[in-house]
Image (cartoon, helix red, strand yellow):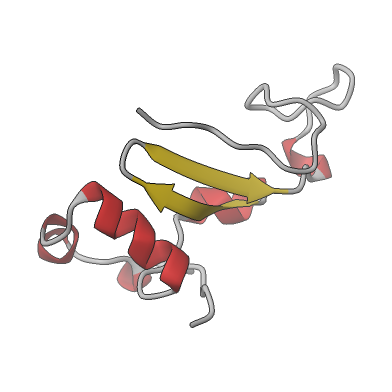
Amino acid sequence: MPRIPATSSADLPGRAEILARTGLQFVEDMIAGRLPPPPIGETLGFAPVEAAQGRAVFAGAARFAAMTRWAGCMAAGTGPSSTAAWAAR
């Protein structure tokens, strides 16, 4: 199922729909395309690609709009790497 980004608050799941899932199920449903990815991911050019108990991996490409003036680093401080991964604990 394709990941379709939310374009308005109407596209986002409601409170009951969110609370019906565990955090892991929520991220898995975004990866599977059953829920839209978070709008900030579209802005910064990253999306969740893998989720497991105690771990979430996001991947993306550095875009010019997310760069700082210093050495082309991502605004979040991840560096100019084309793929970034964070472990959520």
